Picture 1 (cartoon, helix red, strand yellow):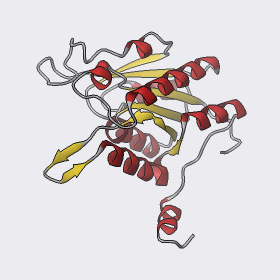
Picture 2 (tube, rainbow, N blue to C red):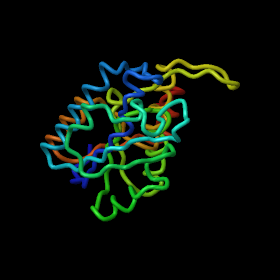
Picture 3 (cartoon, rainbow, N blue to C red):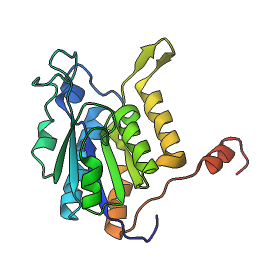
Length: 209
């Protein structure tokens, strides 16, 4: 953790009914772990005067998930009822794409993003990569995010596998990965977290560090 004092925003991505009790339920970590942590993080952000960005994914009315106007597309009440500084409605994975998010960050002099919500490997991943490319420092909390399983022409993977591998890659270059408890402790101390790097991550894996 660095001593530099960040201008941080908390980005709460797509905590919607579809992921909690709908057709697209998050499997790993289970929502009964990730959701309370998201709530804790939002409350801590409010306590520390950190702006909170709440993000909502909406698709056309005939889509099988997140259909405009559907119950599944609604923000989960625990998130909707908490304080936020800015609401983003998006139609693509990255929060930056075709939204005013980037402009809002610039107008508020934000340099550090803490990303929580769903899904680890999709909207979180897309947002984190773009944020890093734009020069932001990024943090993400492994127990305040989550994934679900996939099976397609490329093969299959469990929710736990997808979640773990995505976060290993994130930590190697794109975002500092930590637990909610560690982030909350760091918040009390001040400063921000830094990610690893691709060379050191590789060298550890092959036993050279």
